[in-house]
Length: 637
Image 1 (cartoon, rainbow, N blue to C red):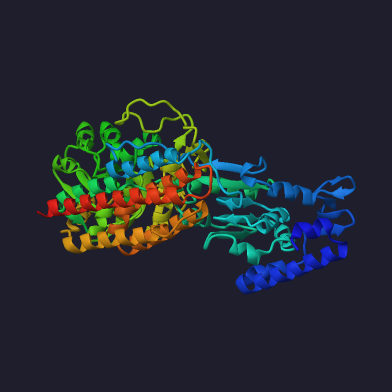
Image 2: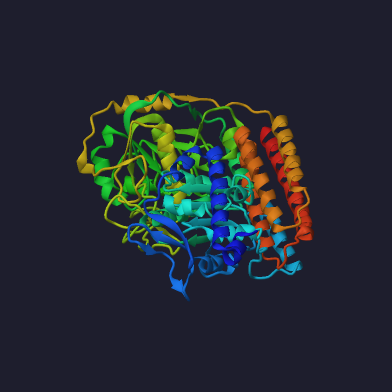
């Protein structure tokens, strides 16, 4: 019998027996699969416990000796409350639906001729297949779902017994007693089978590391990106902190996907720049490197930078160059990573002058030509960087400040961050004054989220700033410099220490010798096999289409198919990053729009729509291969 039937029609003795057997089954399950949780669940309740009497079911607060669910008509309302929660969750005011700002919209094919073509043709298909404005999902299919506490969890079992399948499920219960109570109701063994493989994150009492949240979204990056169903059962500081983490990681997940067209620009630029000297990282130098970005904090730090210019190596990142030079500060290396064709004009306006350029391999060649001295480094995350066997500098996205910080952490023992604010500071403009961007008003975008700052000033971040923060955090953890000092008023950067310029002093260094050591640490770039890369690309296409070629009839099956393909692309990007990164951005965008398009169909049988979409994807992939093949052959000749 189902739980609801037992609870509403069964005798008290039968209910007790059912709940006892369910608890035994769950304890056996956790004993085999999570021994630590099993040990915790054996403890005596201290905060809450389950009550079963003639009035029905309830939860008692052991300290206050009060019931959590009220009495109505001489009966507890726990079962009725959970039944209400379990009814039509995607159209239920108790649940919240969150949509990342990803919408089905036509793409400018002049900017993205292949990716844009595929997405636009899929959108046209929706119209041909009676698409509607709203989303439609089978009531028994839940997209990405997050539960902030479950207060007994009956609703979860009611949904499971009705055959609801969860694509991804993050269940956090901060109180062990609440979770123990849920073990009387929820069949966790069966629930795990009703969540897609690897999609169930069960967290009890604490989530110590926000990396858990990041992994939850990253594990199914495409399908977890745009639609989330949330339920918050109660309010607590711990839950509020978790909600903040989820918002931030959810927002960061949607950025940094790239496109095939952009990667081709980077590839073309790289192959034209390959004769420049490339940085080969020397043994870490015992020297402070000051990384200067163009955040508003820079205005307050210019005196410190000028006063200590001869005691540290100065990396100017992007548009920070003009404020530094206007203040009379001599820059040691100007860091650039942009592919844009107008980078040359930006540098000339600063002006670049005698400053040495240290650029990512994919920068526009015209920018390098105006420099009196230029060196390159292979920027991680760009397909063209992995075409060669040289060392690649990771964590260089999304901003040039990330690249400057990663380079500094690789080269120096101590890193000073100036103007890497990673957010909007309340009352200040987005960038420093007198920079390339001119006068800006102090404005915080609507989609920005408040984050932890270094000072009393409030700091807000959008998805790009959150991604930048995430990568800075990871670079500090991975590269492990001796010390990272953050002098800015912006976001708190995990792994760094906030200091004021007056809190410390720098020792004299042999700056001329150190600069020469860095410049001498270069090597020529390796060659690559034209034929092998083209062969690998065609093989990759065949493997992608084989995964997509399986019959798809429902939206649930489409979600699973996209996850299989994403997992395959992750493997390829790990083993052959040049190949994976080259195609994965456009494929991800196309697949996400395919998912979005399917949700706008007012029925669940999408076999015809999917078959037609697959033809578009196949044609688009062929166009990408032709362009890639011609590009390599043209440059090699």
